[in-house]
Image 1: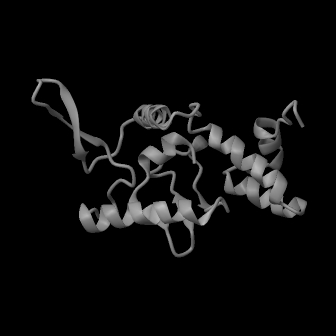
Image 2 (image 1 turned 60 degrees about the horizontal axis):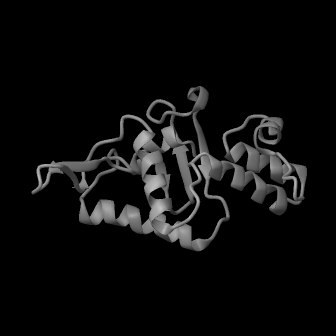
Length: 165
């Protein structure tokens, strides 16, 4: 998903049983205000487990409800040294996707790996789809799952063949 859509997601938009995210343009900031359902890509059970644990944490530990944010704002308070410090989560949506991108940068830096912006993961998903899809119909479905009406959008925007290939 695009980071602006992620910032606006509510818990009710995620269906863990089906493995989908309903991107309702009335509530989620989708490109061109388009409503559609995305299904979890086959990127490993560990990632799905992380999402499931996160949702359980929000619902059970923080008592978040269906209309609450999937990725809530950080609660910021004044620390002992009179500087602002994070202190848990606020039951509010991020206003923009900038804090999400900043969290990505911090996380990559702390892990000691090269930073990739959230949108670059869409490039990775397209590369994976090019390898896994066995027919034009399968790749069309993959493309639609990214929110593209036309498969050429996927190829033109993300289908660059790397020089080493």
